[in-house]
Length: 185
Image (cartoon, rainbow, N blue to C red; front, top):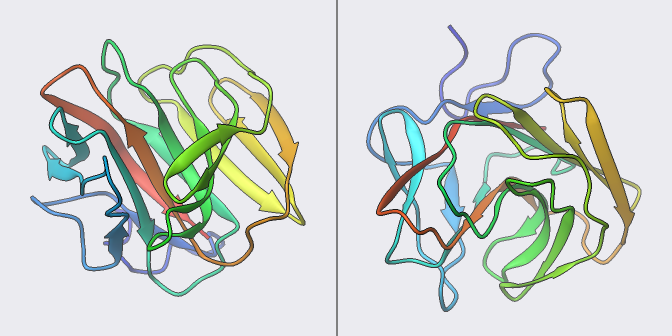
């Protein structure tokens, strides 16, 4: 059994993990509250979103470096604007970098909640159970699908520091299980 929310990861992990138990995010999460954004809901041990909010951009506020974020896809909706892991988030400002999507859409840079693609499309469609990772090392932001062994990168040094977290966008289903686990370091 892995560590609980906000607890140090197993030896060698160097970070934190959250398996999203219970009916709400732990107190270590904060979500952007700009126009079109809402906090996600949690149920069936997975982070979910609903059709009434257009997006959830959430950061893990435990104290650690914000250079890596990864999550396991819990399920895929028939259409998702974006489903991503994020680094260097300033959640209150809506800034940071996110990578993911159901088709390997590349890397997005968020500025005040608005996103712009800064990397080329890469990889193939993400499947349930895939582990998606983003890492920022000295301004080189790399997206990796650990399960499918593909990656792509972009260079941008606008955002440093901050926290790691996740994002998912507008959905066409009422309830959607996006993530089953998340970890950051």
